[in-house]
Length: 377
Ligand code: NAD
Image (cartoon, rainbow, N blue to C red):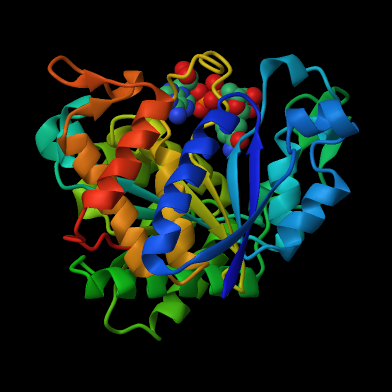
């Protein structure tokens, strides 16, 4: 069966890191009898330059017709003065909206070899393997009405004020809760605790009282999975105090945005963290958690591992190729064990490599790596 993959490298380091992930997929395909049909298109600032829009119709159509999208990153400071709807980052929001990508998966795994790269003490992060699931299509980012007006009440009537609307509907909460419980169940089968922590602000916000009520109701359908609830402020603290006590964390769009970035730093470098955004048909957009890193673009020093690990998530979630996904993840571990490091994760005693050399090392390891481990979720 042919698997259609839309390749959207984007801006900055996007093109460099996506090239390495494609190289890895190409090396793997014959070993598993996979046939990838890939097509590349412009997105973000690159698309704006060529077509006057960050998400041209042709790119959107390609993405919609694909089984999965491998995405690099978009953005550059030079676009900061553009109207909001023309900024590169709007391409991601547009793809999420048009493809109905409502569930964002961000695993935060601390690789044994990178324990010292974390800003936390090694004993707090050694063996860390948690999964943050962020709802992507609701919450204060999309709620209406929003805008600016002259205040008629509050502390400063008659002055300019801005407002946004936080909202979630019951079905939106139900579907993300099911995703979280199912992910926890899968991870439990692979040895995790089998726990969902739902993060809210139910003590202050009605939207999150509904969230908490609905997650609790859905949880009754998963008696094998433990559920606890935590306020966002406490969760932000616990994540750095005792991160290993989490297993699966599920939360709304805004809290998830913040918590997933916080979790990313537990693991050492943002250059290591993959992500997946899925819709109800398991069609997904796979991208590293970091941005386009204009400060290092074109220098050949970006870490391609987050993108390579995103390709592994793509194989697992959208293309149903768990063994091939495991194979990539094992290869990445063995490359780290062999001491290869891009600059962002370099430390004394290891071998500093370029973006391309890191990709080559993973390809070589794929040829040699037997599948030893199953990485959860
Ligand atoms: P960033 O993630 O691009 O970079 C933050 C820091 O991390 C920089 O010092 C960068 O050099 C470093 N870094 C990031 N990825 C790296 C990698 N793979 N290897 C080594 N080092 C890496 O965030 P930023 O600087 O705040 O944003 C830059 C641009 O990216 C902005 O235009 C922003 O809007 C955009 N952005 C895009 C996405 C996306 O495409 N999903 C996400 C975040 C930011």
